[in-house]
Length: 515
Image (cartoon, rainbow, N blue to C red; front, top):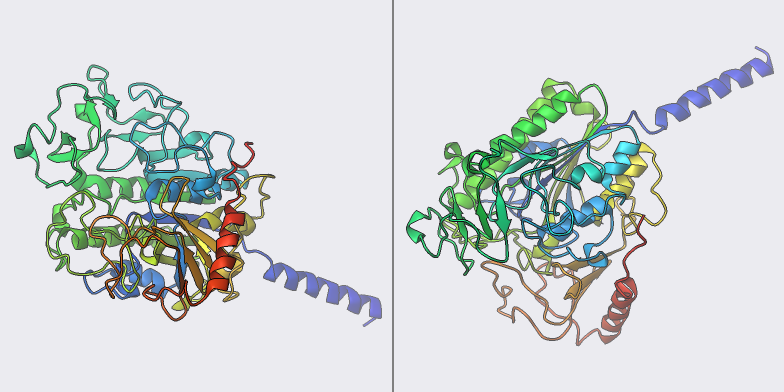
C-alpha cells in the first residue's frame, strides 16, 4: 500500500476515534428536586426510618455524591440559584422565602438552566413547586393571564404551584392560567390583610385536621391552615392527598409528549415539605409516622419516573439527577404525627434553615448509563448552582457574558472522570442578603458569628454546645464532619484567612449586570 493511502487510512481511523470519544448525542436531562429531604433520609445514605428502594436503585445504577450542597438552606434562594447560576444573596429582593403572591424574582431575559437548554434545541418544562414568584410587581392576576412566569425565563411548558403547600393560593397553574378556575368565583390573595370569608385557624380551630404551630392566623383549606389569606377559587383548589400523583402524572406526560426530541425537565416535587399529607395508600407504611410516609411517597414518584423512562426506552439517553433543596427538618410549623426520635441529617449538625452542614449538605444521585459508572460514590464538592454551566458544557452551548457568574462546570466530576471538582469554594447561607454566612474551602469551613442551626426541632450539636455561638467558628470537616470541635482559637491564622476570603467573595453584594 502506498504511503499516501496509508496516511489517508490512518487519518480516517483517527477521525473515527476522535468522533467516538467526542460528546455523545445530547441526552435528555431531568433534574428531580425533592423538598426538605435530609442527608440521611434515604436508605442508600444510611436511613433506618424509611425505605427508598427506587432511589436506592437509582444510586445502584449511578453515582451517589457525598459532598453536594444546596446553594442555600431554604427553598426560594436555592431554587433561584439553581436556575440562574448566581448565589441568591447576590440578587435583588426575593432571596428570602417568598410569599405566595410575590412577583417573579427572576427578571425575563436572565439566562437560566432552562433558557440555555432551550438555546440548544431542547424542549423545556417545569412541573411541581415553583416558589419564585409570579407576575409583575404587586403579584399576578390569578383570574387572568399570569405573566411573567417560568414561560418567560426559558420554559416551554409549566404545571406548577405558586409557592408551597403551607401557603395560599392552593391552586395549580398550567402555562398561563389557574387550572379549573370558575370566572364566577374569582380568587383573591393577600399576605397583608384578611380577605373574604374563608375560615381561619384562629377562628375555627375545630376545622383543622393538622395541628399547626406557625403562631399566626391562617386560611383553612381542606382542613389545613395555610399562611396568608385567600378567598374564591373553590373548584380550582387542590387536594393535598393527591398532589404527588398530580405532579407525577404531569411530569410523565411531559416526557411522553417529548420522547422524540431532547428535553429538559425540572421536576420539583412538594414531598416532603409541610404540610405532610401523604396519599392514604402510604399512611402507616413507615415506622416513624407522616414524615416517613411522605418519604415513601416521594420514592414512589421516583419509581414511576424510572419506569416511564424504561417504558419509552429513554433510560440510556437520559441524565437523571436527584437531590434536595435543603437539609431535612422536623415539625416545621406543623406537628409531625408519629415518632420523631431520629435525625434526618445524621451525622451532620443542624437542620433546614441553618448554615451548619445539616442545613445544606444534601443527597445527590446522578445516573446516565454508559457515561456514569454504576454503584459508585464521589466526594467531589459541588452545588446546585453549578448545573447551568455543567448542562451548557454537556450540550455545547455558550453562556452569555455576565450570566450564571457563580456557576462552575463540574461535568468531569459529575461523570466520574475525576474525583476532584472544579469547585474549590462554597458559600452557605439560609436566605436574605445579610447572613450569617459560612465559607467552605477544601476541608475547612468558616462560620460567621451567630450561626444558626435551623428550623423546627433544631438542637445543639451532640456535645451540647450553644446553638448560636456569638463568635465565628472554624471546623475541619475531614476529621469533624459533625462540626463539634471549634478550632477558631487554635487556628487564628486559618480563621483570619477564611474571614478575609469570604469578604472578598461577597464583595459589596453587587448585583450582576442585567441582560
